[in-house]
Image (cartoon, rainbow, N blue to C red; front, side):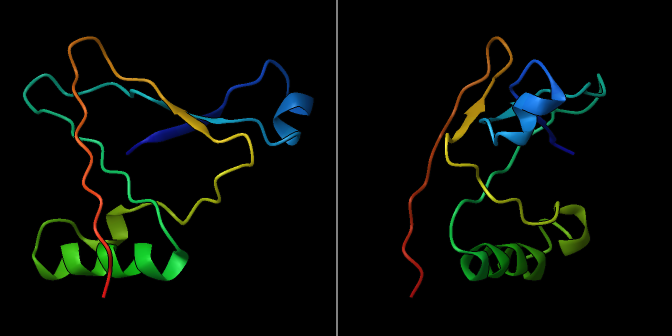
Length: 92
């Protein structure tokens, strides 16, 4: 599960819709944790989640609820040694 936190020092600052911080929750030593992030329209994100479910890659119930990205954007904080790959694909 990905932990979403607002990057702000107080609850009042969080109310101002600051950027989201995607943190690294504790990983079980015997398993590698991959974080999947799907960004797009609500219909597009739901479609991608459904496609991954049909492929038996990830059950739909394991995904979080859809989260609206605040105006300032969001920050992704990797652990040391992690890498990043991005696939951009148009839905037909």
